[in-house]
Image (cartoon, helix red, strand yellow):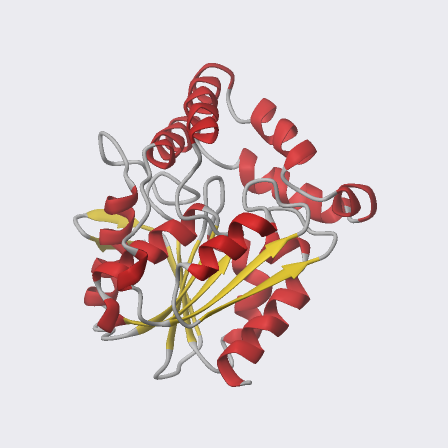
Length: 258
């Protein structure tokens, strides 16, 4: 645990390189969402994986959460570690956080990899997030985890990779209901960053069965970010870094060194 921006946050650090990679998880995720990629990338980067406030091992300490607050926490983490410039990786909600950092602090972001990315939730999804917050507070995480397993991962993952489904369910069920609810509310209010201000190279990756970040929407997002490229993975849902771990690592490696 580290004190960052006046609050306690769980932060994992692996590797010892002058190049820093900060990995930002999404709604219902934790630093372990990126364990498959981190185990490989730590050979060439110092990999930093925080649990955002209210998620995983980082307790909820604020009255409310926001995308701006999450972005400020990541920048504060960089400042505390004396990191002038870093590569950012985001998944789902984490991609929105990364985009805001890249737009507000372009000189501090070397590149972005955005997995299951979106600029902001569409209006129907905002209502879903608010309803999910209510459900988390009233019924806990079990019904949310079970419902998301039916829609958030691909049919192939669900049918042929039960260990992946189990990992996703475990990550979701480890969230505290109040922390998850507050994060849902933060996401429901998210607004797009000023994408014209993003200057860094960007890699966008999504799955062909990703209902949160469908390929057509991700390709549109890519056109709004200069110096970007988009890849669509087959038989993959929204939990990109876990469902297609090796392919994501390969695409990231090619992006950094290809």
